[in-house]
Length: 486
Image 1: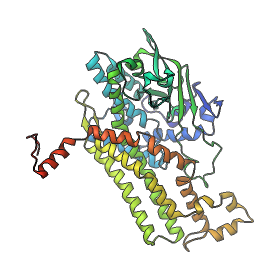
Image 2: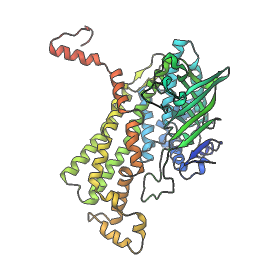
Image 3: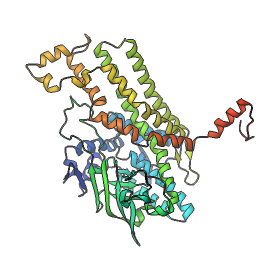
Image 4: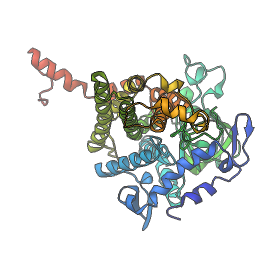
């Protein structure tokens, strides 16, 4: 099996996995009204791979078969650019949601391929060979894969080894000849309830005393002892008129609990080599920051378009401050797009594997820029739209034969825009900026794919600070200590 159909992907999720929604175990995730939205969103990845018009960027050939580009080990800037194109295309199809069947998991896989080779060099292990075989297993079976990274952390003032409850960071509780047993939990498992595989990475650096927390492995989503508790959301059937985006697309996260889960030895990619835990963390960030900013760009396109439609419906499209806000929104969106391209065009090559990853400084800069300005973008769209975004009527009012004609009459704005068109635009802006969907994006923008603080630290760690310092020394007449610099 090289490339699966969307329906084959959906059928593969009927495997007895242990998933809970609002306290109830779900018998079949593919039939649950809430989870089904996320599943249909994830299936877009499979639909894109089978679209002949997307073949140039969605599919590559390996072992004589077409495979998903998400499983390609990138070796050139063009590999990264086409992967970026694939992410952007899928997100645009889903109104700013990435399908996320393979996007995050693919980033994690690339990180494991590079970091496992580093661990092998330092510790004479064979993790890289295992990672290569796992990659082959993924692309041969065209599996979806989710990334589990963030531990629940307990008391955040304490290190993993200092926690009163040792399970607040996932750790090895038993080592066997044929594998390991792990216990703990990971938060924010995006698409976990409806994925095939879960790839687990360490969340931070570890000390020698914390070596049992330095662990990286993969398990199927239906592994015995694995329990997933979905995020709380209203999951009734939403009306696409009132919720034009969130009624059709979603990414559903879960708290994933590892209740003494056995991991076969061949699926373990780090097991106690504490000094290499940060290699996995940092390499994942190198790939995932660009993925994050790339899939956000179509959402920013949507926000710019909604602001334009709202201004036109309100008759304010030529008002000075409205034009200024729209201009800023365009600058914001296009800067994000340009920076992701730049990061891919100027990659760093890992000397041990030959794989490339986006420029770390630029990739952290674009993720930071997006996150730091997102709330200002929400404010601009809300200001253009007006208070009716949260006070306006619903579709049922518009369809009511008694009051519907009055709603149509009084919701007309510009003479060229009907009351229905204006109401639909209002509902779109509400879904984007003043709904459960909006709250989700406002929080995850700050915390998903790395916090603002993490991105600042990464820039300081990866940036060529000496280059900046030397330029200032030369300008000040202090001399340049390194004669090789210009």
